[in-house]
Amino acid sequence: MYRVMALAVALIAGLALAIPGMAQDDDVVIEEDIIEEAPVPPAPAIEKTKIATGLLHVREWGVDTLAWDGGPEPKYDAEMLPYFYDVCEVPITPEPRPVVDEPAPKPERTRTARGAKPIVYFDCDKDVTFTCKVRYTQGAVTWMYPKPTRRTGKDRVEWENVSLFADGVKREKSPALAALEHAPADHWANFSRDGGTGSLSISGEHERYLFYEGNPFQPFEADVFKDAKGDYILRNYGASPLYDLRVALKTDTGVKAWYVRELAAATAIPADQKLDERAAIAWGNEGKPGVLAASVEADGLTARQATAFDRAWRDDFFAADGNVLSYRRSRAEVDARCELTVTCSGTPVRIHRSGWVFVHDIDLARQAEIEALVTAAIKNDEESAKKLIGLGIAGVNAIRRAMSNVEEPLSRRVAMAKLLKRCVP
Image 1 (tube, one colour):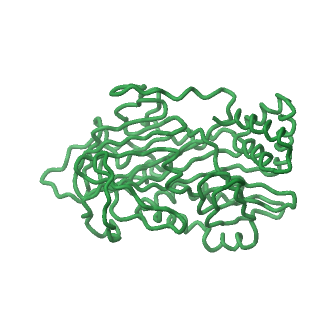
Image 2: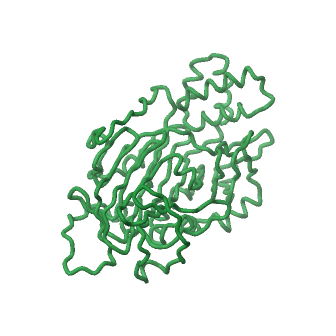
Image 3: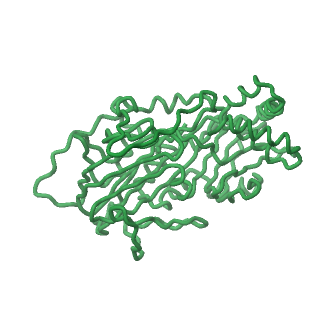
C-alpha cells in the first residue's frame, strides 16, 4: 500500500540540488501563473542562517509501499494515530465546483499500493496564508492531518486558508496556536516535526507539516526475478528512469545486496540490469544506509527533513533479513501519479518532492509457482486467474514477464494482456 511517507510537505529555503540524469527544475508559481526566475544561490543550512528568499518553499517526501505478494501490511496500518482523519470523517463535498468521482475499484482487482506518509513541509521568511491541494491521478485519498477543508472527490483533498507562522519572524506577540497533538516520541509523526521551520494553523488545529496517505492504483514500475540462467535481474517497465535502486534478497548462501544508481526507462521493451558483482560492490559504497538521507537532500529537501525521512524508513529499506526492493522516482513520475498544488497570493511558490517506492516480503522461491499460474490462466483456468489477481505485484510482474517474451505466439500474448487488464485499472 502507498503510505505518505507517509506520501510531508515542507517549506524550506534553498534550491534543490541537481541529480545526474534527472530534470530537477522546480516550478515557481504566483497564484496560478508560472513565471521564469533567475537561479537562487544555495543557502547555508537553515539551522544556522536566516531565511531571506521571498519564496514559499514546499518540500514533500513520501513512499509507495506494497507487500510483494499482495498481502496485508499490519505494521503500517498500526501507524495511524487516533487524531488522524480518515475518509469517513471528511465526507466528499463537491463545492465549490462539481467533480466527477473515479469509478469504484473493481472487487477482483489486485491489492493496490499504499502512499505512505507523504509529509509536506512549508518554509518562508514571512508569515503567509496559502491553499494546498492533493489529487491522485489514479487512486484515492485515505488519511489526512490536520483536517482538510474538504474532499471534492475520492481522489482529491484541499486545505484552504492555511496560516504559516514562520519561526524566523520576530513578533511582539506570539500567535495563539492550539497545542500539538500527542504522538509517541519514537513515532514518525513526532520526530518528523523536527523538519518544519514554521507552524501551520488551520481550522483550530496546529501542526508543523501537512500529512496525507492514499492508495494509488497504478502498478509499480520495477521487477526483480531470476532468469533462465539463474541470474538475478532488475527490470523497469515504466516510461521514466528509476534511481537509487537497492535490492536485498535472501539466498541459499545468505542475504545478497546490490545497488544500481539508475535504471533506464523502458522503450519498446523493458529495461534490464543484471545484478552482478559490480552492483554488489556499489552497495558497499553508495547503497549503504548512510547515503539515504543524501538522496533525499538532492531532491531539494533540507538536512533536517532528510534526517526525518532516514529515521522513518531506514529500518525498512535496509531490513536485515533482506527480501526488499526500494527506489526513487523522477520528479516527473511523482507528479504524474499524484498532483500537489500550492497557491499563495503575492508570494512565489517552489515545490520540491522526493518520491520513493518500497516493496517488501519478496519471495523468489515462489517465482516458478506464480509463473505456472500465468500459463494456466491464459488457458482459461479461472481458479488460477483469481489466485494470480490476488498476488499483488508478484502476479502482475509474472504476467508482464510472459508478455515481454517475443517468442510467445501473438494469441497467447493477447490473452496475457486481457489477464493483466483484470489485475490493474
